[in-house]
Image (cartoon, rainbow, N blue to C red; front, side, top):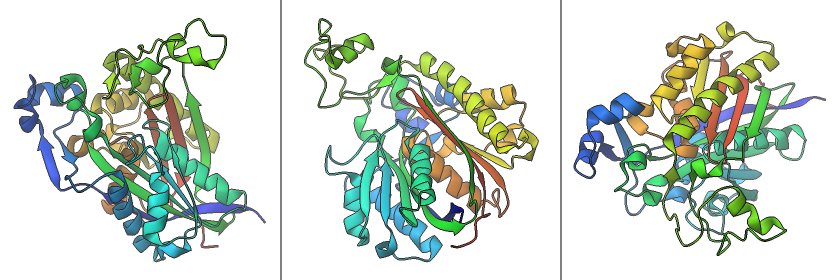
Amino acid sequence: MLRGARIAGWGKYAPERILTNHDIERMVDTSDEWIVSRTGIRERRIVADHEGTASMALAAAREALCCAGVEGSSVELIIVATVSPDYQFPAVACLLQAALGARAGAFDLQAGCSGFVYGLVTGYQFIQSGLYRRVLVVGADTLSRVLDWTDRSTCVLFGDGAGAIYLEATEGAGDFVTVALGSEGQNPAALYMDGVGRPKTGCADSDNGADLVSMAGLPALCEPARYVKMEGREVFRFASRVLTDSVRQVVDAAGWTLDQVGVIIPHQANLRIIQSASKTLGVPIGKFFVNVDRFGNTSNGSVPVALCEAVEAGAIRPGSRVVLASFGAGLTWAATAVTWGSGARG
């Protein structure tokens, strides 16, 4: 019998503290007008001292499970997409597993800001394979703690947040229709941050994989990047192209037309990227759900938070054809076409 996956629950979490553009004006040489005109962002949420990626992930997960009417103990697999875990190890997913009281497999997934859609597709595949019936997928990031708050090119862009989707097995095809994943690893320096395992030198004379850092054009360890580093123009060009291409790819593969799509939930990185995709695709900007003005770029929290808000606003209803599309460091992209609420409980 054909097995699919249905989106049975959803939840989000945003910290209480709001950091406005006017607040940032007092921190770096910028202005509200400059930020809004270039990004569409007006404010973002910032974690309190007692909060972190795991605590936000837990709050979003509990809301998603409550929405589905299930206990955390019933979850069989937990996937957390993040680029800012509380610890290098253990995984945020393991902290979540313990807090929820689940007897579950648990792992973190890292694919830049595309990670949540990668994780959602991974969870769907675990269900489709028959290995699990109940999977929790969370996207959460605390980017405020890895920003250089003297660098106006990055500190104005990002915020903190988390979102979660609970998936259940269904009889039949389920909610997921098509998927597109991709990467262009030739330009990792466009968006990066140092990790603990990088070589101490470029190792350009090596014949093995140790020279990957220098080959990629990433800086030597003598110039460590403890904070997010980004080439804004490079990322903008990449994101504008792959957001358009990935939406078109999954819509075509689903056998839909763009007119038949009810809502597009894009990664909330920059309003101008979304506007560019709208123009290129010939789709009204109103078909794109946008909340970047209130949250900024929350990385892996971006798509699920926007998805939850779209449902709350009534923009997504049973039967709606929805496209989720994201892009991020790597450089990576991911998209999926979903028929909302099409799967019956299995």
